Length: 217
Image (cartoon, rainbow, N blue to C red; front, side, top):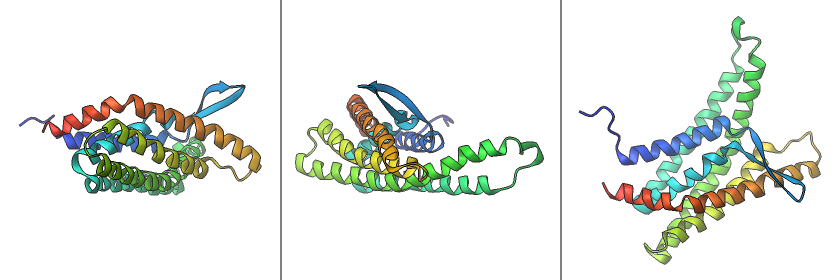
């Protein structure tokens, strides 16, 4: 018996869940990217993992169909929901004497994680099911050909919905003027979406490789 043997589908789903969990726990941090005409563009650090979620989504839809892909999406939603609930519980519990000094920082980090999880849950639910729907519809129209087109078209649309909805829910500051919020959110949404689109194009060979990987069972 090989203790390190992992079924191909399980490995792919594990990657999917990892990317979601990593995005939830670390996604509250925004980083500067570059300036365009003196305008600072920013991004969440989740830019590293989110495109992989959509790649795995397309692979599963291509090989197993939309119903199987939707089941995995529901599993991802459950992970997001559990992280959200656990963050609320963890930040509400009183700290031990040894942890009192660190507790404010802990609550700040995981309090943000709770908001990020709530925003992510909403955006993820809408965008992921939309991605599966668009990809499946394109497959009905185009057949098994043009996987690159079906992958990127579904990703571009669903990622724009995901990015816009998530950024508004996660980073809109009620103590800031509307103009300041719009300026900051646009600086997050546009570059984040463009980078995710670019990542989708770059990762297209991975989608082909993933499809072959699963079909080679």
